[in-house]
Each structure stands twice: as C-alpha cells, then as structure tokens.
Amino acid sequence: MTVTFEGGETQKQQLVNQLYKLPDVCSIKEFTPDTSVSCELMLIKLKNDSKTRSDILAAADAFGAKTMDYSKDSLMLCLTSESRKIDEFVDLMRDYEILEICRTGNVSLEKGSTTIRQAINF
Image (cartoon, rainbow, N blue to C red):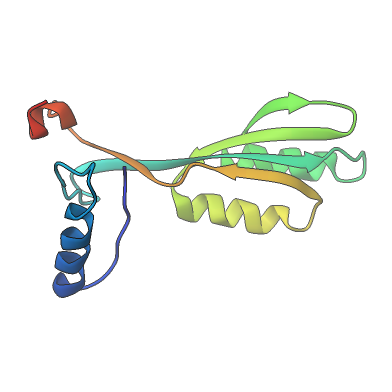
C-alpha cells in the first residue's frame, strides 16, 4: 500500500503509529522524491464527437496519453504520470464530455536494487 503524506514530523509519527495498528501492516518504509519513483495511472473515457475529437487527441498527445479504445461514440485514453499532471489533464478534459474516469492513486518503488521483500525480510 502506498500512502502519500504532507505534514510535520509530529503528524508523520501519528500516521505511522496509526498504520501500525492495522493488522496487516508489518513494515513501513518512508520514500522521498530523491530516493524513489512514483506515478499514477488513469483511464478516462470521453464522448467521441467529430467537433471535439481533434482537440482531445491533441491534448492527449501533448500530455503523453495513449488511445486505448476508439469507437464511434467514445474514446478511452490512458495516462501514466505524476498525480499533479493527471489532475491538470482532467481539468483540461472537463471542457469535453467525460463519461468515466478510473485512477489508481499513487504507487512508488525505491530507486536502486533494494526491494520491499528485502527490506521486510519475507
């Protein structure tokens, strides 16, 4: 499970204490932007309209989104990026008819060869 947190040391310690109260939590590892890679995945389905299609596809290209499904009535785009960039893309797409959105939330892994399995001794 990845938890993203912003706050002071006291709030961080309170969060850690609360997480350790959960029965399935056996280890907590803090990642920083310098020592980890984080991203989010989003699928967004939009109405496929000849009037807006080229604008949507141009925005998708500018953000690096991929077309995952294309039909007469809808198109589905996939974007993997930082949460902030995904938020910006969704804000831009609000000018068009959004049919559905599905987001994973942030996921992270530590840079280098260290693995979670090694860190918690499974």
